[in-house]
Amino acid sequence: MQNMPFPIDWFQQQTTPFYYYDFRILQKTLEAAKKAVVENDNYHLHYAVKANSNPQILKKISQAGLGADCVSGGEIKAALAAGFPASSIVFAGVGKADWEIKLALEVQISCFNVESIPELYVINDLAAEQGVKANIAFRITPNIDAHTNSKITTGLRENKFGIAMEDMVFAVKEAISLPHINYVGLHFHIGSQILDNSRFAVLSERINKLQDQLDAENIKTSTINVGGGLGVNYEYPDEHLIPDFKKYIDTFRHILKLRPGQQVHFELGRSIVAQCGTLISRVLYVKEGHNKKFLILDAGFTDLIRPAMYNAFHLAQNLTATTKKIEKYDIVGPICESSDIFIKDFYMPEGKRGDLIAFRSAGAYGEIMASQYNCRSLPNSIVSE
Image 1 (tube, rainbow, N blue to C red):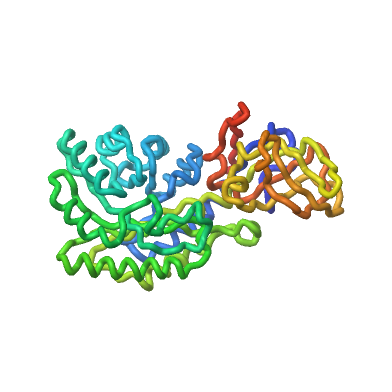
Image 2 (cartoon, rainbow, N blue to C red):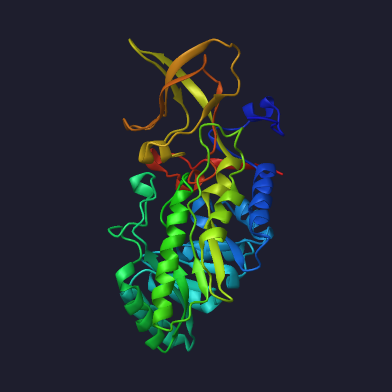
């Protein structure tokens, strides 16, 4: 961890495990993301709240002027509490409950990203009860393989998300026919942690063809929402703290064939917050097996579940190592499950009881996915301005 604002002694005094957020990195990330879209007045950034809904994180992002992409009523409440204007909130999700839809209508969010025809009908009925019209965009599954983990791929035809391409025209016509629905656009999201920009190029070309189909039906579409999915470098976070937002945005800028007046929305989550967050834990025991050595930590998959759930890698660093001697460890947690393993066969400086271990790039899908399994306490969080 380069240029830490707090000395190691300060970290040692904290109760572990805890999440540490470096707001200097978050600020630089937000500035880079905003700079990438500044050339286009019709390009708009939204933050995917599901990546991290820590109130201080949300407040910082809302102050930067981003909109909010929400997938639950709870996230809408959190976004509003953090200062996001309702007019900048979009609401996605395959299973919107009635109370969530009513809440979104009452506060007058910008748009619902609708994922099925039955949902469309429910939104129309609930909007009728309030005597309003709901802005909607249809989430279309463009049948694109994001070349990422199967558990975070969302753009294939057989995923639970969205409406198939071949059903798009029918869905849009049905929306236009409903009295309390205002059709505004199309929404896409093909997956997460995408490092291959060619996937976004394919998405842009697919959107162009779908727009041609709507043009042939004389259907006006005012908004194109391309979702998010931009990945981060988990292996070398210090060398790659800021994702290449310009390259990502330029992919769409160069390939998307927009109609006059069309607005383009991006929903970035991981790429905004991943690198500013670190999980800090402490070594409880160094266990010597016959063939392996284990660092047993006070953090487990209740604090950071990505390695157990997605086989994800987070760089581990010993912040308090007193020797340059390198050992090979399985780094594990205290949870009563065999899957509570952070990294296997990992080389790092020799560890001892009490050492602080940092798991980097943990700002996205870390604290937000923490649980109290084994009756454990949720991790605390500490921020640095």
